Amino acid sequence: MHQSTPAFNFEQTYILEDDFVRLSPLKKTHQKSLQYITDDPEIWTYFFEKGANKEQLIHYIQTALENRSLGKEYPFVVYDKVKKAYAGTTRLYEFSSDLSTIKLGHTWYGKTFRGTGLNKHCKFLLFEFIFDQIGLERIGFGSYKENEISIAAMKSVGCKEEGMLRGMFPALNRKGRTDAILLSILRKEWQSYGKTALSKKLHQTSKNN
Image (cartoon, rainbow, N blue to C red):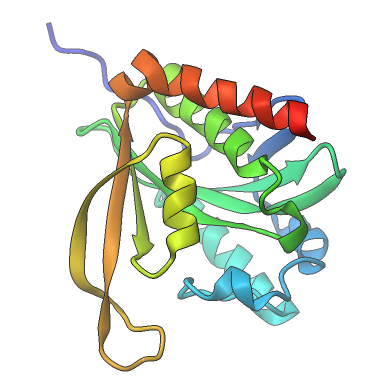
């Protein structure tokens, strides 16, 4: 018997939260709250789109919202409940109901929110939502090969490196090309050991803070 197609609705309001973080749909009104943390070159090094100043951030948010209306992307804004402040954004994109897959990326956080365990809490909520609630089979990720911090962060939440796209991006110095590193996590990995392992890391982080 053919399994039912997983349902992900770009028009629906999805709110994911625990005691430390809340992810909710990105809105135009979040621009003012995010503007305080976006003037940081480290955030935008590996992004084609920029949001370092007011004009750029307005365009960045508008593009994300337009892509949501087209069913291409679902952008979340990240709120840190501990610091009581907006911390950054992340997105789901390239959803395929036929393949039961989706991608996760466009993730950035302000400087004071990096290295705090916030990203692990976000990824736990997103993985739980995608795999356990929606029922998809695979989440894909990609990164500049030079972005070692991002690659390490993805591996730390259970993602596995699976390949490389050669010459995928313009080089950061705009001279030549550079490669993209591909990673993923599968539903069976999440349910068999990934969820437990990441949950333990979250508890350990909570004890240390």
